[in-house]
Image: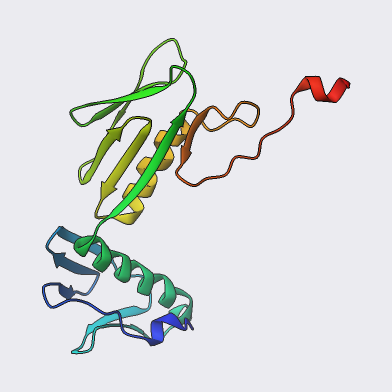
Length: 178
């Protein structure tokens, strides 16, 4: 059983959590999210916070920590939101925002277009793409998809990387022959 799930999830007064039979609705100043209930778990709203409780069953303990984290992320998303920052490294590599589409020039013969889904927005500052939204999973998925167009390569370090990501550099052919 999860140790975190033994504690209540704190929530502000302006956050409303409505548990249902199959999902939990979380509403706050930034928007509304719905979290699907995992098997053998239940959510209760108390005066001291939101509790995730196990229901009788074989997998009750296994799903408890995951459900607790999903509800906590939903509460954090509707209050603060989530963001990921991608940095573009390389000569001639750049990004431009056209409405809800990020257009990337990454050294290919054509520009790469990535359509942003509903609920996710992007901003571009110099060589950084800032992806924001209220759903943590969706923000991370969009960032991973954009990064996958040109992952950072280890010889020159060119490509798209997360801010703070360390790319181990390799020595090229010249050092191997010496």
